[in-house]
Length: 439
Image 1 (cartoon, rainbow, N blue to C red):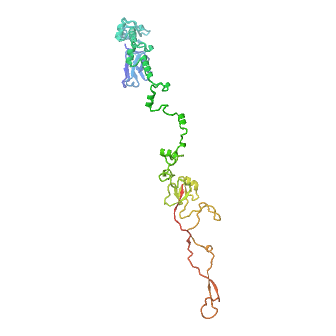
Image 2 (cartoon, helix red, strand yellow; image 1 turned 180 degrees about the horizontal axis):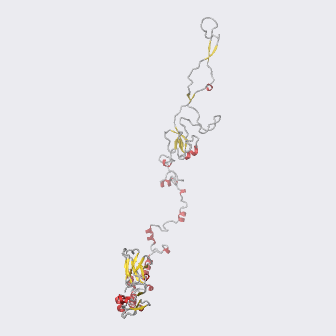
Image 3 (cartoon, rainbow, N blue to C red; image 1 turned 60 degrees about the vertical axis):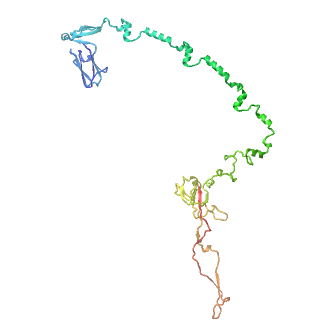
């Protein structure tokens, strides 16, 4: 009788039968994937003789392995013999012994035990009871320890030993030939030969075989062919340039009337004049007023638009941040602009510039003041002191007219006023130009 059943779950079945008899539901051990389950199922058929079943509350998952097995004791009633099941249980196989024991209620307990079987291997022997070990190894296709040891020994005799450091090579000459290397004796011989042909660093060229040929190859003179510094100083001590014709030396050197030292345009260099005897234009400072005038300078300018770095003195409001340097100089003397981001430029349109301050016997003029008028109407107080008198003569008697030149009855009278009292031009002859201010 089988005391264990194993099923592969299909994900739908919830009922799994077992064929062995159990006295109680607890005699059935339920496992899913080798994990014992303690709930989620009901055991049916406990106490019967024909087995039973396990009903799960929910179907085990698809592919799960469901195992139902008896917990190790089978108890049957006396009726089991009549039903024929006990005979099945008492059939002993090879290596299995069966025995029965009855309790006071007539229930029988079946004991199943292993027994020795002729010709079977015993676990306790660890294969020592094999009849033909060589045949067993052949069947398993494995080598004996002796076979392996012999193979290792044989291969060891053919291999180079690490500890021998290639000292166990049979034919060293052949080995060097296979590696394409020279022996130490061959290398030493070549080094000795090449050493005799090479110049030695320690000899400082003293080992040159043919020094004359070497100098020819290097295209240099021997010490016997040239002066040393001291020899040259001695030989030419009285032949310095100070004792020769300087003009002739310059002519021979292709120089002008004066030798030029450090010709160029850098600091400390001599500048060569051009064909007109002038400094080359490329070496002159940049043209224009911008580079030489301080910020806030005013000049007259004949153009209609201010050059770069300058603004027209037209009273316009300009940015305090864009023209920060100019704003730092003039501030809001000529107008506050918008009072926050702009300031006004001087307005010299139609005006002549005068110096600020108080000159000797002159009116004090504050920076930024606008004074004067283009035209002016003279008041009586501004007119020069003058009078217009004329003489009239009245005759003393007679009916005729006045007698000119007579002093009789002279009267002094004032003439009538003439003119329209209009303002008169107060400007000298002028030429209109733009004033510009340096930013």
